[in-house]
Amino acid sequence: MDSDLEKIVRRNIKELEKAVSTETGLKVAKVMQGITDKENIAWAIAGGLAMHLYGFDRSTKDVDFIADKRLSLSVVRRLNFGGERYEIKIGKRAIPVDWILRSDKYKDFYRQALKDATELDGWKILTPEWLVILKYIAGRGKDRLDLFWLLQQKGLVNRNTVRKNLVKVVGKLGAEGFLLGLEREYDLADMTADREGDENESYKPDDSYPDYND
Image (cartoon, rainbow, N blue to C red; front, side):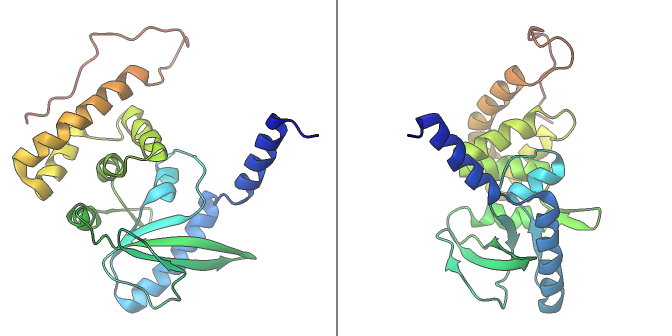
């Protein structure tokens, strides 16, 4: 009889078989690029693939994009917050693609994130600062892991730019409200950030803290 641990391991192995690698994710992005060029649609890489490209190799089962229009593809299902799920064939696999067109109260954040997307190595991708905001809004367990990782990477996220991005959408007063919650995440990320050297190296209380009042 299988032990509980064996069942857990077997279940996780099956889940890993569904994982989408960075290479496969970029193949999907290439297909989407060809379609969007023909249909004149603005889009950018988001979600797990964006995290992969910035260096975090967590497992993901689909490929996420944000966009300004729907595609002329068969819809697998509608996304409850706005958008559609498609499937793109890569080799023998049908890769799930979430094409995000937010229609809820957070739609303005996503529209601005798309407008501010950057082009890196030929790919349109959400900036790290916008990923921080959208991960904070999403608030699921995996989103918090992504958020902490982003904040812990030296030189990746400009926290003043996070503030400026928030101001674009909700104004100065609204941004300050968001930052009350985000600053708690900043503190946790700073305290748990990996540091080079001895794994038992203590946290230095005199480390500089970013100034939001620029």
